[in-house]
Amino acid sequence: MMRWKSVSALVIHLSLLIAYASRLPVVYALADTFAPGEIWRDTQGIPINAHGAGFLYDRGTYYWFGEFKVAGSAGNKAHVGISCYTSKDLYHWKDRGIALKVSGDPDSDIADGSIIERPKVLFNTQTHMYVMWFHLELKGQGYKAARVGIAVSKKPAGPYTFLRSFRPNGEMSRDMTLFQDDDGSAYLVTSSEDNRTMHVSRLSDDFLSTTNEFHRIFVDQVLEAPAIFKYKGKYYFVGSHCTGWAPNPAVSAVSDSIFGPWKMLGNPARGPKADITFGSQSTYVLPVYGKKGAFLFIADRWNPGNAIDGRYIWLPIHLESEGFTIPWQTRWDLSAFPNFN
Image (cartoon, rainbow, N blue to C red):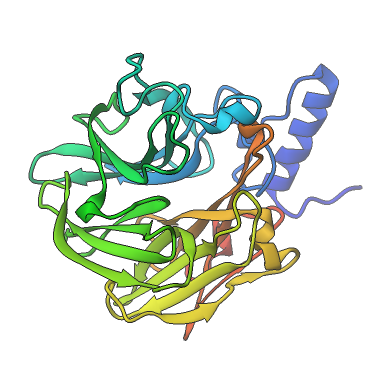
């Protein structure tokens, strides 16, 4: 008799048998597990389409925002907009539609065919608005514009209204993320100066612009794909080198201040293909709400030839005395966190 190590394993086996028998696609969301690099389907059985992701936790619900891709190499440009999915448990995600649509106006900064990447959303307690920032490149200009775009909504899932685009503090901005600190202050962390140096800018009180307070970090190190998280008073950074769509070793660092100085920690990835970050590139570090020390490394396995088939890499971050590691897991669940309860 076959013995099952867990209920999750039995559920996965049964779903495979059912899918084989009916010739239907396997819906991995039936099991409470993560399967990095496999097709991840929403609650309707459709592959999740939300790349370069950012996340928001709001009143018991997680919101996953990402680039909506279409098939082929042309799918790397924005032809639809920013998608949104919601979940209560991080395993099962419901499609909430397009949070920010591209514009039908060819003169709009977010016209069909522009480049819209890495959306990040924060809730502003003063204005009671949800504020979305994203990397924006104007249509037909390649990556020359190097701007951020801002959109707002009264509801977390949208729809979002585009406000404007600009270069923060007059400086170039490409791959970017947002980080909100314990005191409510928010920061833009972005690849600037032709990706040679990161800039950290404090946001205005309404989160709609940067202030004059910004610092240069990782000077002349040529990095992109930034993600920031904080634990026990220390700030942690994970990002990547700049090698186009090709994966490379991840970069990590730690600091007592978001403005630095930052101490480099090396590549945190551990396991097969750790030298190329498991074939992926970082986009976000997601805290598991209510669970101290539980953080998810979120990354994309890009497919530039067929953008819609890009896959997601979600892995547990293991915090250590001097930094953190990201061990490869073929299939795992939230019990992987040592302090998870």
